Length: 423
Image (cartoon, rainbow, N blue to C red; front, side):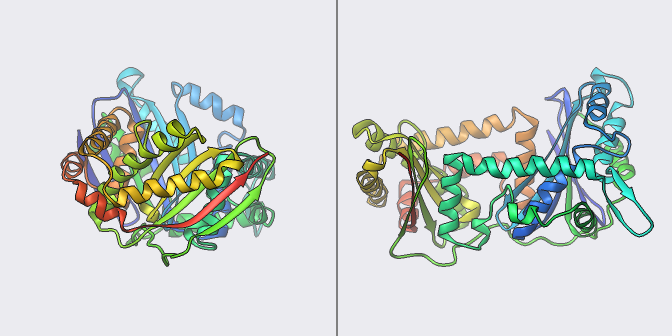
């Protein structure tokens, strides 16, 4: 596998050359500082652009075009990465070796058309997205926002974060907001789309068995519409505003069978090594699987929950513990969870626990090389988060000691307890 980064005045091109896959995947990322009301706009841009293009003005024609490109697969997504909002467009298609000459150029042109040749309507003074396609995208996003509230697990995690730090990057919903959607029309959306092309930070990633010179040439030909000047990016990482000494408890009710308990812990003043490696080991030992402290104590020994897990979020400097319980078991479950977190501070875990955590981490690293999307995530992490490459990660995870985990434990503070009470 060979990686090369090529910079132009307006974007970075990242080429990962490998013969491991029969496909080529191209990902185009548009990145800008996170603004709450723009999350909805960016989700709408994704939905609208992926609905149709000038050349293929209906979803049916888009589908026929992908079939003619040997079942090319495309998608768009918008996600939050710490302090930034990233809008991503992907295409995956068979390498020309398995189809016919010229298919790489045609496939990349199809992606370019999605991004730069939207289905629009013009009059003398205005340009806007076609109303029919705008309405389809609008209704799709509206349904997604509503359905996100109907998923109790997802809803409880969102509400915990919103209560932990209201009106902060941490509290923003990645699906967007109905109140922002209702203020939007096709003209406003098109103006925002133009601002993306003129001001976002843009990275293009290509992975597959490709010729570097040729891919550079094809990208230059198809992405000449990018007008923005490449500019430096700030760190994506969020540091906690303040550490709460007395955690707050929030309870809400919903007509569901199972109550949802979510605990939010802030992690204060982590070192880079703790953030990237020690937190993984800590979280796995505490609540990463059936051998974890939380699973054995809360579920197996006391039968108080249907599931329980902990997840470290290094980008946001937090750790969350999620569980499904009966509402009558709230106090006892909370007490046992707090006790296990306290036991981690006291070093009540074994060297074998650390070994298991490291093996799990190393196995997950090995799996990264099994799919193009995982490798793209790896290299985008290296670009945006200054993450280490795979070989360095192997070496660094093995340096984590019991003392490192205990030291990190002292920096983890319970901030918010959220209970979504069921019937």
